[in-house]
Length: 396
Image (cartoon, rainbow, N blue to C red; front, side, top):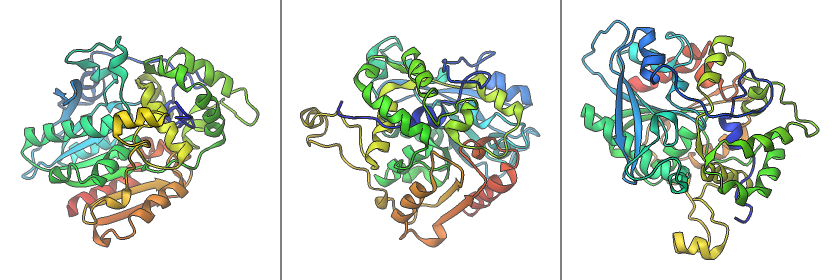
C-alpha cells in the first residue's frame, strides 16, 4: 500500500465522538427512535419523508425530505436543496441545533424543499442489492465512489421527484465530492448553485494531532484495510496511543480534531455525540490520508504501479484538476480561520485554482473565529453564514 494514507483527516474530519468527550474511544452509533425523521425532524413539528435511492453500483441510500416549513406554508417556487454531510456523520449533522439555528430547518422555513443525503455505510444507508455490511466487498470504496455514484444518484433522484434543478450545500467531505464532480463537468445540468462550507480540496496542512496520527496510520495501512468499517477497535487502540504522545492533548477530543470551535452549545454538542461517529470504509479513510501525504487531489492509490495499472491503465492514479471547474458554476465558499481541516492555506490553494472564475459566480466568505464544526453547529451561524448563503441562493 506504499504509504497510502496520511493524517487523521478522517478521524479528524469528524471522528468526534468520545461520548462524554474525554479521550478517544470511537464507537459506531445507531439512529435513535426509528430513524432521522422520527427522532430529529418530526419531534420539532416538521413533516418528514424517508426515501431510498439505489446507486448504479448497488448501494441503497437513505434520504430524508422536509417538504415544508413548520407553518406548512407553500411557496410558488418550491426549489429543492440537497444537503450532504461530512465524514463520519450523517444527515443528523444539519439538525443538531434548534430549528431557528439549524440550516435544514431554516431552509424549510424559508420555502425550500429540503433533501438530506446520507453517504453509504451510515446507519440510513446500509443497504445493498447483493452485499451485506458483513462482507468485505461491501466496504471496497472510497470517496471516488461517493463522487461517481452516491452524489449523482441523490442529484438525479431529487430532480426526478421535483422536476427542478437543485441547490446544493456540502460540509467538509461533502464539499470534496462536489468539487471533484464539478471538475469533471458532472451534475452541472442538474445544479442551480452550490454552497461549500469548510471546503475540503487540498489537505497538505495538518495539525500536530494529525501529523502524529499520519505517521502511525501510514505504518498500519495494510492491516487497517482488513478491518472493513471505520472506525473499529484497532483504530481505537491507535487513537489511544496517539493521545499519549508529547504535545497531544485529547482532553477535549472535539477541539483537538476539529479545532477550537467558537460558538457551540452544550446541547448541540450532546446531540452530536448521540449521532456520531457514523461508519465509513477504511479505504475511504486511507484515501483521505493519501491526500494529506501527497498534497494532491487524485484517485485512490493502490500503492504499486502494477496494481494502479490494473485499475487505471497507468502507473499512478489519475489527478482531479480543480482548475477544470467551469467558470460559470455559481459557488459560495465559506471557511474559517481556526479550522485545522479546511486549513486557510489549503483553501487559498483551491481559490488559486478558481482565480479565473467569473466574479459574479463566486462568493467567498472568511470567518476568522470559526473552526470546522462551527459551520453546521455555531449558535450564530444562522446570521453570519446562513443569511449570506440564502442571499446567494436567491440570486440563482
